Image 1 (cartoon, rainbow, N blue to C red):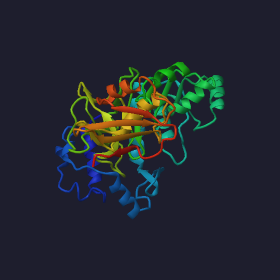
Image 2: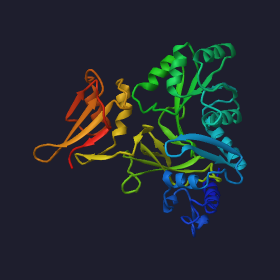
Image 3: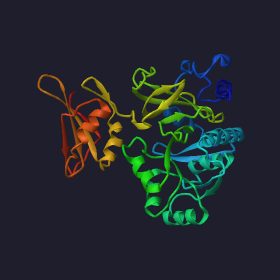
Image 4: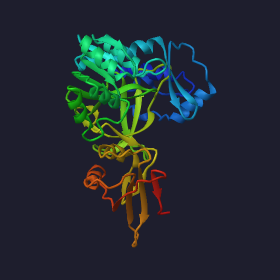
Length: 379
């Protein structure tokens, strides 16, 4: 495919959209390429929320609508035109072909109905030559029965539900997982592959963007899906590209959206960038959110990036961990991690230091822990 030409098609559509008309006025479309996209302004979720609130009805030309829960407005709609639906299905089918699904039988246990997840994989798998059962979520025991009766080789669902299916006796050659922290959690993939008896690969997407990154069978990180998106990793403060191996915010330009364009969309998701042979890879997947950031001992620390490691040690990061930053005598920073547990796992400290580059001064266990994820007492 010609990515530059597709990008120009998307930008041309965006220039006619209320969210972008003023921002992209005067942009020379013909000079744009994936390499020069950084010249365009960024887009935030807040801009889209304001537009949706001001224009709650589906836009003219909408052929398909999905909804995602939104704390701000109740439901966040996603609209696709007929051309968007066609393009998206074929673009994702290219990714499925690279995973060798042709001639296989796939059971999709992601949600259908108002959510986009099940449909995204369903249509792409069909186009790539697989037979698809649109099962939807729940009923692990029934999925096991169907897998054994009909010989399904591929399972598509979130990793936690895949583990339930495996525990009920389900075995699959290939698991396509996503929607939850997965490959960013140390040891999780290995446990799941052992349980389900096959290879497990990860994918990343959002309701606004579709699926934009996915693993190959080599399991060497989440690769940008070239037909679906242009991904950048930027420093959330400077908005400059992060160096190789550095953490930053994932910014995505979707190539599958013209009715609801997403141009340099700030996802708020945290990832480490790697560039190999001119391609962009997220070797650790999505490792957290950029909503909270604190500088400790001269290093940027995002409390949510600790979540995958805490999960690997059996600690639920949702309300189960709190970072406390204080000033030591002499003016240096003191960093304490409090966890909701009876005791501190012995290898937790070294694992966190290896992942973040920061040595914790103290880790405290408190089974009654409550409070926000970050407490900064320095100011």
